[in-house]
Image (cartoon, rainbow, N blue to C red; front, side, top):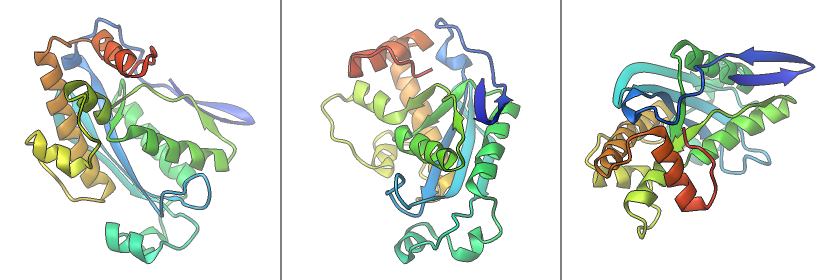
Length: 223
C-alpha cells in the first residue's frame, strides 16, 4: 500500500505484499526513470519527466506511463541539449505532485508488486523531495535496482552507465536521456539480469532479499 498524507491521509492501495517464496517469474513490477533539471535535487533542481514500463512474468510489456512535469523554473540549456526537453514541453505539464499522483495510479491499475530502476535510489529521492516540497510523504514500495543485481553477478566490476550494461548483457537500448526510453532500456536489462540470477539458483523473492543482505549487510528487501 502506498500512502501520501497532508492533514488527511490519502491511501493508494497496491498489490498485497508478496510471499517470500514467490518465484521471480510471477512478479509484476513497474520499472521507472526520471529526468530532472540537474542533480542538486536537495536544493534547486526539479523533476521534469517520469517514464515507466511494466514487467510481468519476466517479460517487458507494452504497458507504459509517461508525463512531462512543470518544474516551476527554467530548464538549463545543457539539460535541454542532453534530454531534448524544452520549455514548451513542460509549460502546460502538471506540477510534480499531480504527476507523481498519476504515476502511482498507473502502478495501482497495473497491480504492481513494487518498482525497479537503474540507480533506483536517485529516482526515489527525486520523488521524495518533490513530495516533501508540498509537505507530503509516502510509504516507499519495495524495489529492485539493476546495480544490485550487477554487483551480485560481477562483484569486482566498476559502476558504469546504463548503456554500457545494456551492451554487456546484449539487451536493447532505447532513446537515451528520455525517461520512457531509459525506463524501457532498464526494463529489458533488468529482465536479463533476473534470468541470469535464476540460472545461478536465485529464483524467489527471498533469494533477492539475500542478495541485498549479502551486499549491504542488511535485510532490506528488494521485493
